[in-house]
Image (cartoon, rainbow over all chains, first blue to last red; front, side):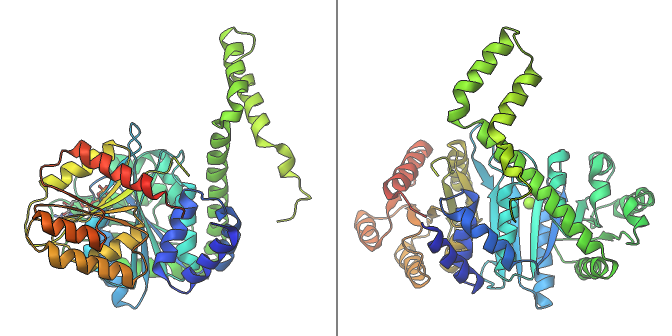
Length: 328
Length: 138
Ligand SMILES: Nc1nc2c(ncn2[C@@H]2O[C@H](COP(=O)(O)OP(=O)(O)OP(=O)(O)O)[C@@H](O)[C@H]2O)c(=O)[nH]1
Ligand SMILES: [Mg+2]
């Protein structure tokens, strides 16, 4: 498709045409020829959606919670899009995208859009494809865009930086969950949800979390970190969750924190995408022969791996592109 | 781009409550490098089409054992045409049905119908071949 055809597709997407929104996401994800030209227009058209990240350990009930939240937000008249990210198998590149199965209550609701995405082996939690898909949905006028990711490891922490509001989902009981939260999720959560509160120990987990959050930097910034109890399966606690999300957005706006976060998000996106581009270029077959030479040189100890890597990166990065004269 | 994984929607329509077979197929497709969206049991034709559009899958694989294939497939095709996506997604079926029904459905636009006992490898090959044959441009 030509760049003009993609622009036309964006116009239809902005008019609310769902197949066009969907195609645009796919086109950008697989980087179809002509799509890079349309991206600037996608970003120019966006900036209104409330982007919410929902993360937490596998099986915590994130998708069920999103399903329940969709019901709550729809009741409040909001149009909501969801991007559910699951890992691709590193061995085969395939994936079973199973989040959507929990969100079937809204399969026919025109005010809900759900897209499942696989990580496709991309390095860094904020994949270019996820960032771009959020931008498309924002440009197409969805009020809220929810991104569900599995919160394990440092990579996934990046995803929360593109969200305005991040909810961390844990479940009753000590052990792994609290450990995962200690490992870094604690600092990035704006709202903490203890899901499966129908199970024993929920109050205790909530109390422990609250205790740990006393030390958080975010609390110092003026936002009181809520710790909420939910039962995703029957909707208990969902009005409070929706209130907390709306309250956080209001606080972001009134405190000026929104502007700061937009910058953080921009920085995180640029860095993540730059990493991805760099890795792609390094893997380009055109670089291959030079790469083989470097391998030989390091193996023969004529040079060291760090120097070889520098040569590689300098070679593919085209420093002239960073020219400050270049207008944005 | 050539290295983009094939995306497949697997849906089970109708009242029969077994999805062991579909899950085996889902794993086989994943192991062949495809991205599989599985929607669970008891979906309706309208849900399948809406999901296929949002997920922008290459292939819609519908499994049904309930004998309602002659109403459900035409319904799906009708909805796909209505929403302008009939050329966008390859429609495949799985289940047990008489040969003359298979012929009729193929004429209507179901691109392949695989019997209940088709081995997973053959399903993978069929999906690949259909996607390759189409050489989708978008
Ligand atoms: N008892 C109880 N079970 C729940 C609740 N919420 C979700 N579950 C169950 O938890 C399981 C996992 O739910 P999902 O929503 O798929 O969890 P997830 O965090 O999205 O899982 P992944 O995406 O695989 O990481 C399912 O079997 C749900 O039925 C809850 O509030 N209470
Ligand atoms: Mg999930």
